[in-house]
Length: 423
Image 1 (cartoon, rainbow, N blue to C red):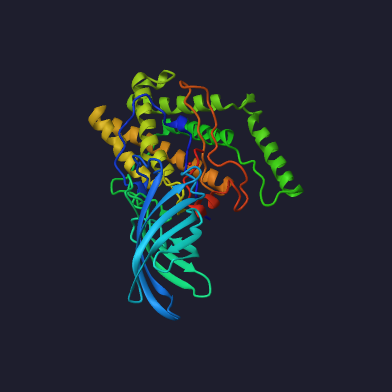
Image 2: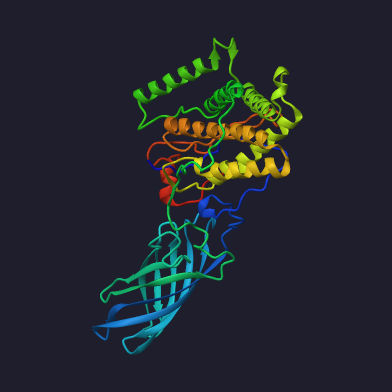
């Protein structure tokens, strides 16, 4: 299954007041891209071609070098179409050959058509052009493309060559991963095993895990139609709505589930677990201590910057063996460093806190796995912590999710367009 959407797990799990510096990664591995900027208004290109054509009533070889400038007619971000003017010069057989071409070009399709004026022959002929990058990032990783030109007519001409953009503020092609997929993996456990969660904390962590999955269900439930729609699809949607209604109205809890209540329940359980990890003697008191709350806040910061954001930046790449555990290794190291260096806790406190944090990371992985099974692709959702603004749900993939439809992540991947502000 192609997995094109990034994971935006419950940001309420990890929002905090002071940003923690994330470890550096390449953009292809989930690192942050500083700036892509907007496309230039005028886009210059250089290129060259060789080919065959009719001259003096016989086939002859030809070669040319060219320079061109392109201007988009509509929004340059869309790449729907614009005008390109180019001049060329070279040799046709043993004679000088030069001229101008004016073409309408569609970057999104790679097709162009227009007119070719040959200065030496003094004639105007139609020209058809097709360009293709061959691979992601271009032939040599600098956005260079393979180009084919055909001048049809009684004496046709065929040329094949290479073209490359020049004078760009940001080097084109170098900011795109060479592969269209990413292989995530769960690394083998380290030689030093992760400490087990003490028995007195397991109930709290079970509550936190239940709240995590409930938040995922309440934020973006899977209610879309499947296939081509129709009565069977409508019935399936109604069945899922009925299931969601039963999930919200919980008799065992004597009320209704709300996103705000579940978020508060999650944060209260995590804060309390870290409080007991740092001070087991406080088990007789209720609620979280100031130190436990501060540790939980740091855990949420690291979770956001070491797992959720790097995973989300893989938008548009097929995820093989999809998991967040690859990032969890770095997150645990960053959290342990904070405990020992910044918070200066004892070794036993650090081991218990790391066990709680590891269980916290597994909650994120569980929520990702559940959402993937339900949505058949990577999930995307957003909500706020209890001390932040009112919770809101933001869908990262809306619209028609039928194969090839507007909301189908595979359609986004095939077109290789930038994700709309929904990744």
